[in-house]
Length: 342
Image (cartoon, rainbow, N blue to C red; front, side, top):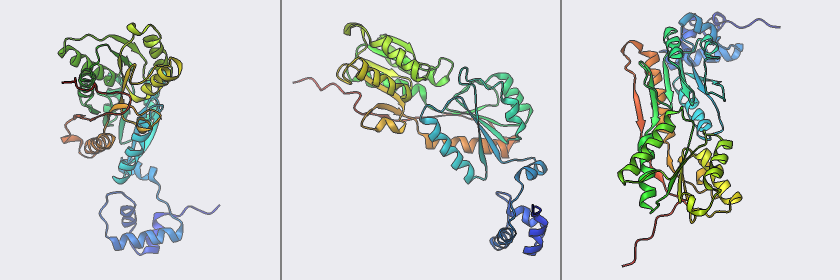
C-alpha cells in the first residue's frame, strides 16, 4: 500500500507554504483564486485529500453539525433534512444525522455519543429535550437550535412555523365553511407543535362560542391515526363530526383512507378534512388535501443562520424564538358553503 500524500508534499509541488495548502482546504479561509487553483491542481496530481478530523483536532472546529430526529415517516422531515444539508454545505458545514428513540422521542441514551463526534452545533427535531441534555450540550460548548419545536429553556433558540396562528386559521376557516361539529385528531401530546396547533383551533372555537365536538389522539403515527379515525367516525352520522382538523398531513392521509375506503364516507360532502404541513403528497390528486403550509425554505434558512451565528460568535449571540406564518392551502377535502340565495 502506498503512503498517504501529505500537505507538505502538495506545498512542495505547488511551490507554496504548507499553511497556504491548509487555507485552501479550510472553508471560509482567505486565499487568492490563483493560489487556490495551483494548490488544488497539485493536490489532484498527487491524489491528496485533506484530513478533516485531524484539522478539527488542531482548530477545535469540525464544521460538522448534528441533526437529531425521532422518525422520518412524516414527509416533512426528509424534505427538511435535504434542504438543511444543502444549505449547511453552502456555508462550509456538513450535517450528521442521529436517530432518537422512536418510542419516547428521547435522546438521553445517545447524547454522549453525539457529543463524542466533536460537532460544532446541534439541531433537534421531533424529540423530547430535557434540561439535563441542554446543560450537557452547554457544558461541552455545543450550541443548540430546535427545529419545528419550541421549549422555554434558557439559551436555546427555536425555529417553528406559527403553529398557534395556523391552528386558529384552520378553525376560522372551518367555521366560515359552515361546520358546526368540528373534531380534532391530536399528535403526540408532548410536542409543542401539537399543543400550539390545538390551542389555536380552540381559540377560534371560543371566539365563536363553539365547543370542540370530538377529540382523539393519533400521536403523529399511522396506526394511531387509523385508530383515532375509526373511533371518531365509526358510529351513527349524528354522532360524527362534520369536519376534522388532523394535526399533521402524515396522519391526515391515513384518516382520509379510513374515511373513504373503510367507512365509505364522502369527503368533503360527509366530512371535511384539513391537515397541517403541506408536504408534497398533499397536492396529489389521490389526496388533494386542504392544509396549512409549513414554509420549509424559510424555516431552514432561519435555522442555518441562527446556528452558524451562535457557533461563530458565541459571546455576542442572543437566542432567538422564530415563528413563521404559513398560508392555508384550500383543496378538495374541504368546501365552502355556497352563499344563501337572495
